[in-house]
Image (cartoon, rainbow, N blue to C red; front, side, top):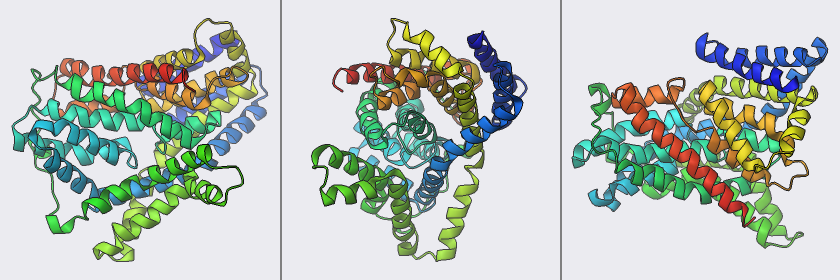
Length: 438
């Protein structure tokens, strides 16, 4: 019976979001109330669980996502993203254009939310394709594969960071493992896959073909642009490496651990970006702060949806459903990593949102990490991979791609959906291989 209630709750969540177009946060709260009361919890206790779940998930994420939004906005508005794109294209040349846009998507995608990165970089892709005469999807899909992988796999993006918090996974290790898995996933889903789609012609709308580009002197230098965009990755990865290589009482290790803490890494990166991409470029502090303020307003709904998912997770735990499901799944011959991936995939297909799918799946499979000897970092990556699977008509990313590239629904399914599914499958394969060495 507890399992049937949860399944009905997920179906209800799907109907509220996809069919009735209800706001995701409101839908999560309603489903949390339904599941808690249906499982026999006192209504007042359900409200307490909802509050606890929201507080526990946001206490950590508000800082990470807030600073991440600020950094992404500074990278975009300063022209650093454009500089990175143009410089890599210049260095790689027409023959290796795919690798140039892959690197651009990866570098820019780490600090920038997916939708922001898409809107910023896709017009640049259109310009590159027009200048080189190459098919648009041949150039564009590798970029989008990079953006998608960073969105689904890597902290400090919302879903992987929130899932890591749920499993108490180490952010540094999650990032390092994620990068190892991301590289082959991007190569297969980007440059290799796009070469099979040259026959599908994309004809973007005219208003997207000529983006407003900054002049050479208006953009920061290449080193500053790449260094600032990747600074949080460098700080977090350095701290993770120090944890593995330096002795416990080492002073340098303690300093690096402090600077590599995700919150501190993002704060330091934002402060550096305020100078390198703002003040050093001749902008006033007021102009820079206006940019920073505008970034924060854009993540409000993302935070609320994550908060709603945190509420449902806590209700599943407090009502005993999570333990019940965990006990059932422990008897399965399937790997917990594969089960987590499958559950995330099913929810993704039903609900559409990768963030919702990842966080909901995390709440369901949380007990699998207790006493099972499964790496919590790999659970994060497994769920993140599943949450990207089979994007279709109930996913906003599907329509964003369709409208910008002006494709039919059929061709969007052949391109975007296949690319996202390839990313998800490659992620699972990478996780299962990496499990053998961890």
